[in-house]
Length: 451
Image (cartoon, rainbow, N blue to C red; front, side, top):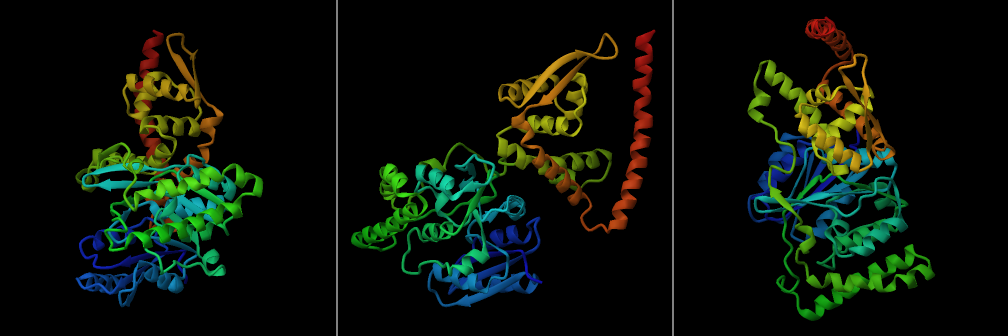
């Protein structure tokens, strides 16, 4: 049976970081993939590491060849790939656990031809979030090109590793890397691919950890005249791309902006300052999980696991809309239940303090995502908080539905349909038992208030 995704990793003398890279791929939540490792004539222990993974996991396929460069390695792997989609990873980088799942879902739910994702830039022990497009829906090639025109030499647009491609488009148009260049070969492939892509989608959750520093072309031993010729050749590709995408009038209007590529690319392979952004400590970029608590038994550990599992699947939505976890959880709850609550009840339900709830409500109101109003409850002493989602927040409802599906799918992973049904019956009995006990004190309090 053919895999859905072919993940391609070219390797040359990568023994130092290869295991971290491969483990991040084979441990993806999305398991319907094949991993094609291409050993490009390594002289260290890379070959043995690759062979070990090939023996251990049937999803791994190894190509061994004499050293001929990364473009040739990728071309060989593309020719051997069986997946519906192609995903590229560099051997000294690694993937977030949900990377492939989120990219495939974005591709299939939107029905687009290319997914371009945010990523993390890793520098030592610091990490920063990098992205460029904040549009959620499908983009036409013209819309995407207008974004790229603003930052033409940005890694976000130029590299392969933050994107998911349709293999059918690659094969139908015989797209391959140019073996004769060693600068912007990724970008040239992307430009060719995009000429055949009708729609493109951005994924605003960072899914890739980029740590590789690009050396300058001069430091690679290339003389200045060849560097200039190569950059002019790449610019010709770039210029022709816009001549293809834009009509003659729009091209003339944007000619100076197109030519900006020559200025932005003058950095000669260095990492642009914009890629560094505001950094946090590596390991703190996602919600922290205590692995000791996850492995423990007991009532508190069980409640902790359940909460963290939910937060894990909610977090991509929080990152997408640029909100802290509590605000995103509040939107999720309102979307799911829609009922009115007292402030204390809502704060307790969300596991936050009342001042933190007040901050969350203010922030969401200022962003035009909710309208919150106080109204009298059934008893004069109690005031209910009625929260309504505004259109900006309702756009997230499909994401919240996906969170619920992912949470349930993870919880019931490996269950048969019969086991899932049996669990649901037992779970309902457990809920009734909990309600019977916990509703008792509440009823007694209500009765005392009426005395």
